[in-house]
Length: 442
Image (cartoon, rainbow, N blue to C red; front, side, top):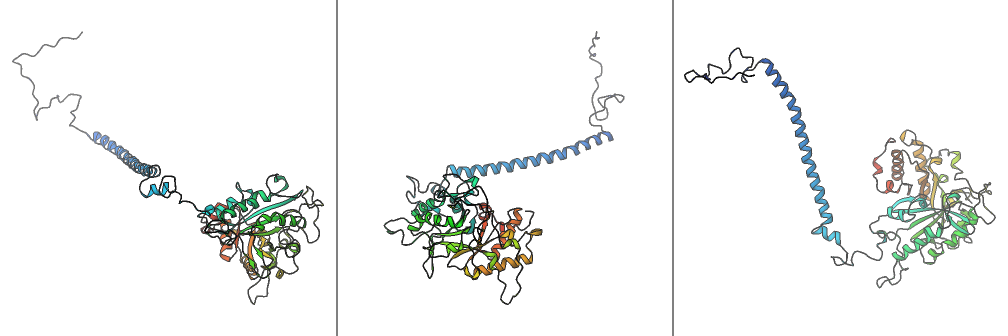
């Protein structure tokens, strides 16, 4: 129980605080707040050192938040222009729509390929793409490839027998779509009363540019040839096929070139190719030429003389079968070799269009990420020989990985004058700055 404290007497002197007399006694265990020791200074210094990084962190975080808000407002402003356009943005966004500026003015008869610029690339195995033919045209490719198999008097499209389906035919994937596209590109109007007078190709930005349809004969060439000739009639009857008139080549929207097992002897014959509208894919390896005055010729690789995929056997009517047998002498030997001429000088612009060869077999592997001097000599000699004969040089079976090596080979071939890049990656060839990538590691 606490003892009550008596109040001080009235006459008792009360303690006062002066500058010379502390409120606490000298022997008090408590120190006044204004009295410090070395220990207190040390404690305050540690506290200040801890505050500095925290202040810096808060300042940095605040700066990031500020910049983030600026970026957010910028994005929201851009979205506002898209969804709530004003001025020129509103006109651009609503142009041609019903009830807006430009109503009925945003289209024209030949706008199928508006804004697409043709570039010298070949859509290899085009039928593998999600949208055959149209994907290549959208990318600007000037050439597409279709592998054709004859089976029970029908021409099917596919890379192998296992990939064939009843509805994927030369007509359904290529001939019929091309007829429809070219009918749109060559309309009959009051300004253009006869659509066949001036043939416009598939590219609206370059109507004189012909699209090459490279048909790879996968089964017996001699059996396939008349069927292909007949399948092209819808294009031929409308005047869409490039042809020879005896003295010159008449350029039309579609140029048909036979490769694979296409026999040169049938292409070069007036009897079997009476319209002269199927051209040959000549053997580029046989066309090597040195510079004027050079006498030495680089020794070709043995495998560069006979190349191509395994040849499928054929039934008596030329249809595909699942068995394999040795092809007849001089026939069905693959690209550029079937029914080949005795001399490379037989291949001219009168009967051929491309001169092609497998890069892997004719040039070889690219070691250390760079083409050797001997490989460059081969490439230059091939291109020189093809151009002297009026043919377009093309290499197939190019390296596709690593990407940097592929880009390096593409860059070299274009700079050396190859006329067409054989590509599988349309986006990489047409939208990427692949010319600047030269390292094999890229």
